[in-house]
Length: 143
Image (tube, rainbow, N blue to C red):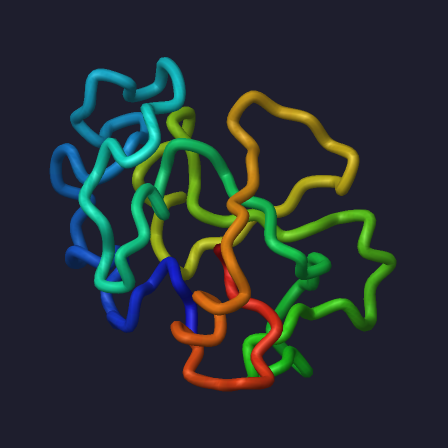
């Protein structure tokens, strides 16, 4: 289960439209749009209690980039097989991107040694990961 999706089936955890003041992106209706990252907790938490999961900065995932989801793990563990892993998956979009890049299902990639001012990471406790996934053996979900 994705922490970004927060148990929903919509494009964003608040619905299918970006709306205004739900995230920081180019066209999200905030004072930071297409200018800079917003402060932490600038937007409401999702159903899992996590803030700022869409926009602001692209978030690194542990997964290696692949052209499709064939043979991808179904248990939430990272996809590390079948690629040289020089390219890693990023998700969530950024203050620099349009709303279509902030959708829960959207993914991008960057080289593992890439450095950009709209790329970051999220650190979370393993206990949250296990709570969200509902599986004691789950090793990965974007946090």
